[in-house]
Image (cartoon, rainbow, N blue to C red):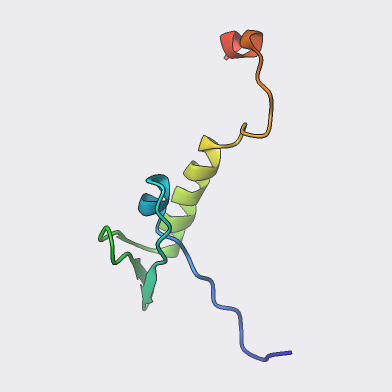
Length: 71
């Protein structure tokens, strides 16, 4: 096994919302996207990922018309 710690690779949340898959470049404590000029900290990225998960939270569930009317 390797003694090297795993390095997390984050994807740009703005590009991900648009359907593109672009990795972020890390410099010190700031992450930046080369395609859309997004810059932010790790906490900003995780918060935006949570918003992305909320968008697709019911994707695996069948929602009936009655359930939609109650929403």
